[in-house]
Every structure is written in structure tokens, then in C-alpha cells.
Length: 493
Image (cartoon, rainbow, N blue to C red):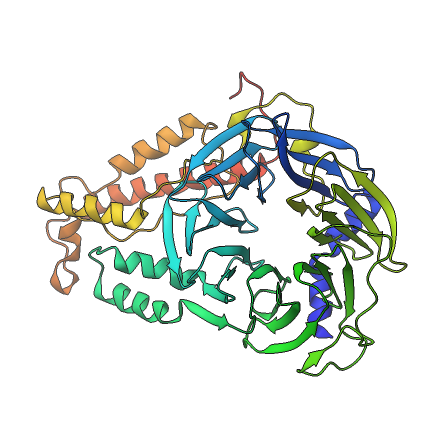
């Protein structure tokens, strides 16, 4: 009860805003490419189409993911590309080439990392820089689905080999860091070696056929994980301990699964077009198999879809269910009565569906498109970033330059690189000239901590320079925070 209460509090603000604005979120529906339109953005409340995202012919998008409130990613199994759209613009913003055909894609909630299943391997990129940070190999057949936890600490993958693997993101990134061959300090290397001992937190092999979908609730390590497979079973796990809490058996292959925000109801979609609702707290459920005839499992939703369910989501405040199907329809259900309250008819079968908590401002804005206002995103690399850094470090060592110091690049959200260029230049100049005049940094780390050749007047001068640098950095940070919501005109930029 305490966990459910804390979980509800985390979405209380979003629920209040939605109730006031009557906003059920925005639907992104992936369609077979007809007339160059591959993704449609529709309002869940009215079904009105707001945007039609386009690409070149025969680019049938099968997986879609949202990057913050700026970008939309799409991938297809037949080509080694990831398409990027700016939400405000209907044309393709970027087309990134990948090492192989992309079979699954996922993005962390904060938009820092993007994970893609390429064959039986998982590639992880840092979105703002485009660096390939790590690769993971634990599956024996192609990866079919990827999901991040809400805090981005764990990545959950399912594949055609019937396995569900829970990856520790910190360990996965550390392993790539160590295997690159970089010259690291002894204490840092020992710390990273300990971290890499738990790259895979759990490996679940309870399914007997390929895994089609995974749902991870909010709550970080305390969340619940639901998986569905073609073996007609849905399994519910506890992420922290890795225990399987219960299993539900149905009469057809399962394709999609989702839960409400309070984790009290589980919704499962099948290949026949049926949707089942499981009331998790209606009775005490044993760990053994629970048949579809159990009191906890309701009858299939009537007068629903006629073909395979390809998308399933619950609105933030848990009273409506949104489903998409290969029969080219999207239905909004009232959970209490199990009746359709809205039917959205499209012209082509739906291959994937994404429901946002609220409607992104970038989709409905009428202001001119300004690429400078977007969050930075670079082209995805094909070679591991740390391997490239290690090669460059070896070249620097051979030329008697200082080798790589082991620093890991990080992203600062909300910083527009085109603003305050003068302040940035002044800060860089102060930092460049703020080093100790005529004294190398190696002289500051002599044995016994002795500083040679430093006069009190020189120390006072350097302290003043350091204070100036700190003052400039502080003023710039404060200015960024205060003006974070301010919109600049072309002349001001």
C-alpha cells in the first residue's frame, strides 16, 4: 500500500493537468508507407490528425520512440536506418545509418540514451553526442523488444530466443570503458571491475516461444515487469529480486501488455484481436498458473478488434485504455464498462503505437521551426566511443603528449549552445589563462605535496583568477536557469 501510494504521488501533477485540460495524450501510429506518410499523430480525445510525418517510399516504420519533447525516432526491420523527426516538422530531420537492421528501439525517459536491437546485440548511444557508448551481447537470436526503467538505471530486453534479460546500465557502460584498453588509474580500474561483475542483473527463461512485448511500471528497482509471448502466457516479475510473482495462461498467442499507473490492473492483447483485463488485487494470486477462467481475469473486451493487437496503453489517470490493431483502427475504451467510447479509423494497418502522457507543445505550436531551439542531437557512431578514444590516446602517448585522463562526457539539459556566445568565450579565455603562469600541473603533484617555486604574491594572483572563473560560471548558470523559458528572436540569437 505504501508503494502504491508513493507511485500515485509521482503522477499526481500530470493527472491534475490532464483533468483540467481534458488531455488524454497524443497517439503516434506507425503505418505502412502510403503516400510517403509513415507516422500519424492523433489526439486521443477526438481522433483528429495533427501531424503526418513523412519519409522516402518503402520506409515502413515498425518501431517508434520519443526523445524528450523534441524528437521522434522510428526504425524498420528491413533497413539499417533510424529515422529522426523533429516533432514540429513533418519532414525527416535526420536519417542515421546503423551497423545492421534495427529490430527494436527504446529511449530513456530523460532522453539521454538510445538503445537499439541490431541482430542479437544491443547498441547504446548517447543521444546528444552520438557516441556509441556500449554494446551488449547475451541473446542468441534477434532482439524483439527493449524497455528502460523510468530512472534509466536498467534496460530490459526480450528476444526470439525466449529470453528476457535485465541489464545494469552502469555496469554495461563500465564494461565498455574497461575493454577499450584505456590507461586508467589503479583505483578507478578496480572500481570499474567490481561494477562489471553484474552486467546482467537477471536472465529469465520461463517463456517457451519468442517474447513479443515487455512492460515495466514506474518505481525504479521496485517496479514490476510484465512479459508476453507467443506461448500464450503472461508472466509478472519483481524487478528487484527477480522472482516471478505469477503467470497467466490465455487461449491465443499474446502480442502486447500494459498496466495502469497504480499497478492494480494488467491488460493483455492477443493475436486474435482480443484484450483481457487482469485485476491483480481482486484476490490472492498463487505463484502457479492462473487460467483465463479465474475470477481475476475478465472476459475479453467485446465488439473490439478483428486482427492482432499492435499497441496497448493506459492513460495517466487510469480510467481509459487505448488499443491499436492491424485492422487499421484505434479504440479508446472505458475501463469500468469495457465499452468503446472512441473509434479512430485509419487507412492502413497499425504496426506500432505510442501514447504520450500529455500532448507535446512542439506538435501543436504554430511558431516557425527553429532548429537552434532543439535539444542537441548528433549522428550515431558505428564504432565504440571508448575504443576510438583509446586509439587517439595511444597516438598522443607516442607523440609525448598527455594521455587520456579517463573523463567521461556528460550532458547538461536545457543548455542552448547558440546562446550567450560572448559569455562562453569569456569563460573559455579565463579558463585558458587561469593556469599557474610558468608552472606545469605536474609540479603541483610532487612527492610529499610540496609546491616548489611559488611565491605568496603569485598564489594570491592565481586565487583571484580562479575566483573570477567561478564568478563567471556562477553568473552564467543563474542566467540559464532564470531565462530557461524565455524565447529569443532572431536578432537576439
